[in-house]
Image 1 (cartoon, rainbow, N blue to C red):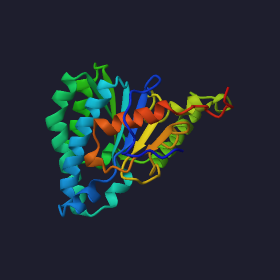
Image 2 (image 1 turned 180 degrees about the vertical axis):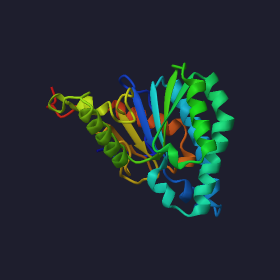
Image 3 (image 1 turned 90 degrees about the vertical axis):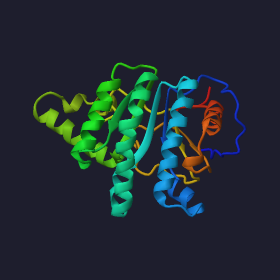
Image 4 (image 1 turned 120 degrees about the vertical axis):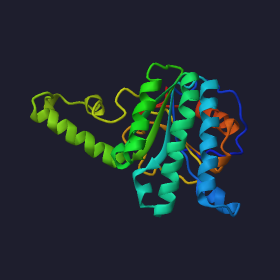
Length: 248
C-alpha cells in the first residue's frame, strides 16, 4: 500500500478512472473538536462533503460510489451522538433525494437497516424506489454496516440455499458466494479512500476489497473536496494492478 496525502498534486489520471470508488469518511469528530464545536457540527459538515464528493464522482464519470456512512459499531457511541447521527440521516433522506434523483443518481443501501426506526426504514425504501431508474452514478450508502456481519449473513443464506437443494456446495465458487452478499450486482471497488490519516479498513467491504487499491489521506472528512478526490484518482492511475500475478 502506498500512502496518499492531501498534499498530492492533483492531475488528470494517466489511465482510465476506476469504475468503483469506495470511501471511508473519517474525521468529523476531530474536525469539530479542533474548532471547539459539538461533534454534530462535524457530522453536518461531513454531509456537505458527501454532496461535493457525489458531484466530483459525476464529473470524473465514476460509475459506482460507495460511502461508509454509519458502521455497525457506531451504535456503541453515546446515545446523544447516535441520536444526532440518525437525525441527520433522516434530514438528508428527506431533503437531498429529489436533487440526487434529478442528477441521475441511483441510491442503494447496505447494512442492517432494521436497527433504524420505522420512519427511517421507510425513507430508505422510498429513496431506492425514487432513484431506481437512474444510471449516471450508482451511489451505495453503507448504514449500520459491518463486513464481518455481512459475510456471516451471506454464509447463512448460502447454507439455507444448500439445504433447500438450490445450491450444490461442491460446485460453489467465490463468484457464487459473492451473490449472497449485500453487494450482489455491484462491482468490487477498484479504489478505497480513507480520510483523516488513519490506515485501516475498519470492517468495511472486507470481501470486496481483496484487490482494491488503498489511498489514505491526511485531510479530515469535512474538508474533503474535489481537489482531494482528483488527487486520489491521480494516485490510482499511477498504480500497477497485478491481481496477484507477476508484472509483464
